[in-house]
Image 1 (cartoon, rainbow, N blue to C red):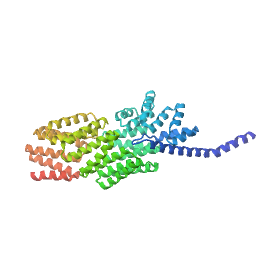
Image 2: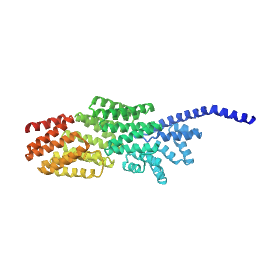
Image 3: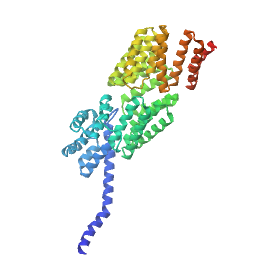
Image 4: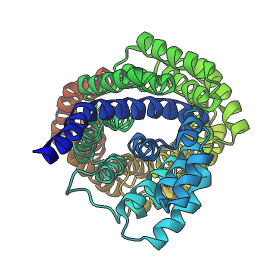
Length: 489
């Protein structure tokens, strides 16, 4: 009985005080985690590397090991003491990730070496893929992704894999798979309380649904991401969502609302002195002006953006600025300038492995040559597009190249080859269910039937073109096709 009293008293005290100690420890972890996250995030610019999940694990280790100095330093954005502690305890993976959260560029070589020595460490491969992705090194990102699972136990590295897979799905035009994988990533991040990464997944989902022109779902995804970023007090990330909401409004032709969102984004980026981000919004505003046929304003915005991007040596921004300037030059029929600008832009896009944008600029270059009646030069470029795109999935619609090739042969009076090329374009448009493209191809084939003298077939073909143009609510194309039909009837 005596021993029972000796044992029960400490046990009773332990049971009473353990929940209090545990709660206090939890509060301490949350306190230092929030301070460390905010401080480290502020030290990075433009596209920071952030892993809220791993940062929380690092803080937990430091709290449980009573590393007060390391915690205080980390709360102020200084990683030295924490990095030293992790190294001494041979936790090299967390040490490298902490280094990456302060300067991702400096950590890539360290993580490369770690992965080389630990080739089966999926978590490390996933983070290396994310670092490459942030640096826009897409081929290296894809190499990492090829060594990662996209199904299985719902781990953090699986969510990272799904996020990257979603991006590449969208890049290759598979928007259904992209939306599924982004949603799965967001769900896992939410379960693991990796809220920053969850918001990133929702933002990517919004971009995917915007590309698919499912505007209501895109709006919901962006609003959800915005709510999380507000709770995390990350104004720069809110600005990123505002920029995306601006693009969403633009494709719905809600131009005033689009401009308001862009202005909100610019105001935030100016406060945080993120000049590259400001320039990116200037480019979006340039594109918005192109959509409204305000070509002088589009040129003005693109030139402002270009000046900043060139000072910062931001290649993708430079390329997009030049692309907008090319379209502004196109409106003025300055075809020599169009060719020069698209040539420069496509080379930059090629360096960035943005092949969809590269082909878009090649296509515009071919159009400029076509308008100058330089048909052989235009055909050479278009053959380059169709040859490359056959071996690579991109968002560029190869049908556009075949359609222009058909127009070239129509101009050369080679009606048989022109018809064959329009048919190739039509086949591709039907696979992708692009109503406007289908209507255009049928209209072009109607012109060929008319030239051959097959009036009855021309009438049927033009009628089919009209049906598709009406279904797409393309009033301009409806008017053109209706004029041809009236002449035939």
